[in-house]
Image (tube, rainbow, N blue to C red; front, top):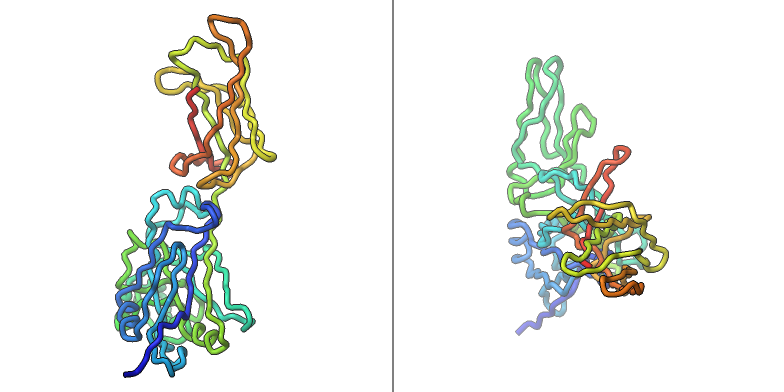
Length: 343
């Protein structure tokens, strides 16, 4: 009986400043149906370990891993977001439409001694079906070319005079990254697929297998890290006075941690007609899931029974990601995190 081994050949890791130890639990990795079939044919499976996804292949003990992996077919995975507040605490543009998704891929590693690659989550591509129309000017003949991510032409057609669209049909191809070229000029780059549900898919992870195999031949198991940054906001605290206690607040301020300072920006009227005091951080601060230290609300007050000045210290919580406000200032979005504190 031939012996086999489970060979670890790739790691995909999701990191995020917002979370403790940068371990981001907000996603699931789901292969597209085509990639799922490829994985089954080659005995590939994905094992989730926290925020890391490890790819294994079952191969014969005497075989080399690079001989047993697909080299002509790349793998595509949907990045499924499981946290509805992810964009609130993440430094991403909120203007991204549902038709665009984050695109992540491994690149050629120039130094064969370095197997780890960091990928910034900044590229968003539109998702299109594999049948679509390309508008062209009707007063001239126009050549429309579709290329795959390797630069190979997969479709070409030249329009006639008075023709206003070129109908593209590349449905015989699988999910992939394609480019639309019009008269030798790049018009658009997109993810073409009939398998992706953009209402659930936050991003696409494209594993370029020839690059993986090249790394493995150098005895380096490639690691692709995606590093999300936490959103920086102004932290706003609304201090609600007590409604059932006979005390008079004489003075209060917030002592921030490290170099953080807060200023009293006045009062506001909250629900029930109560007047509340508003404090705002002088500078933006990165949102975080947990804090090792907390700022302190320091209050001096008197009550109806004595004129003695009393002290009260309240440890204030860090902002929650669901309480984010946006304001336009100098044509830019400025973010505020609001927290209400009841004294």
